[in-house]
Length: 242
Ligand code: URA
Image (tube, rainbow, N blue to C red; front, side, top):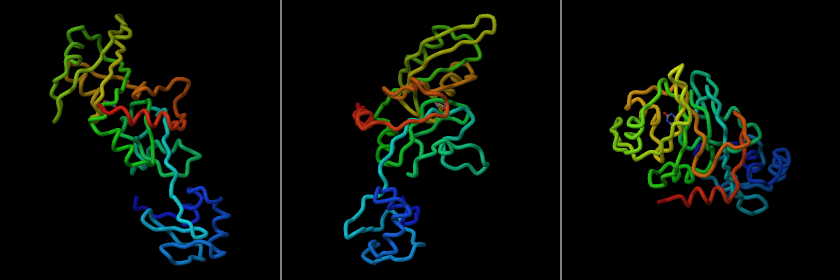
C-alpha cells in the first residue's frame, strides 16, 4: 500500500494508543519517522516509512479478514465514480483499509470476503487454490438434465477460458411460471462466470446469490451484516491449495 495516512492514525491502527493519546505522544517527542523525531501533527506516512515509538518499531495495520453478506445493488469495490453504494460503506467500525477478495456483480448478493491482507487475497484468487464457491441461481426457464450435464462435464468455452466440471442441482421448479432455482458449485472465479455458463447452455440468470465460499457460509446472517473471520478460518482457507 502506498496510500499515505496520518501518523496518529497509523499509530492507533497499530494498537499503540488512541488517536488522541498518539497525538500527545507525537507532541512529546516520543515518535520517530525514518530516524527523525516528529513533533508536529500534520505528518502523513506510508507503509514504507519506519515508525518508532519510544524507540520501538511499530507494526502497522493489523490484518483483518471480514466475511460480508453483500446485498444486491452494491458495487464490489471501495469507490464508485458514479456514487453508487460500495461494499465498504457497510463496514462501520473497522479502521483498516479493506478491499474485496474477487468480486460479486452489482446485482448479485451473498458471501464476499474483505481484507487488508494483499497476500491472502492474491492467494485465494489464484486458480490453484480451487476454492469451491456455491451459488443459487434463479433461471428464466426450467433446464433439462442434459442441459445441466453440459455444465457438469465442463470444457465449455467462454471468452478466453474453458470451464471445469461444476456440481449442479435443481432445487425447485415452477411449472406454471416456467422458472427454476438451481444450485451450482464452481471453483474458478471468472467475472460473470455463472451467468455466462448458463447463457452458454441457453438460460438467463434472473437472480444470483453466493451461499458458500469454501467451508464458509452465511448461516445466521442477514444481508448487509459482516463478521471477522477467526484465525482458524483464515488458516483453513489458505490450506485449500490442491
Ligand atoms: N458469477 C456471476 O455471473 N456473477 C457473480 O457475481 C459471481 C459469479
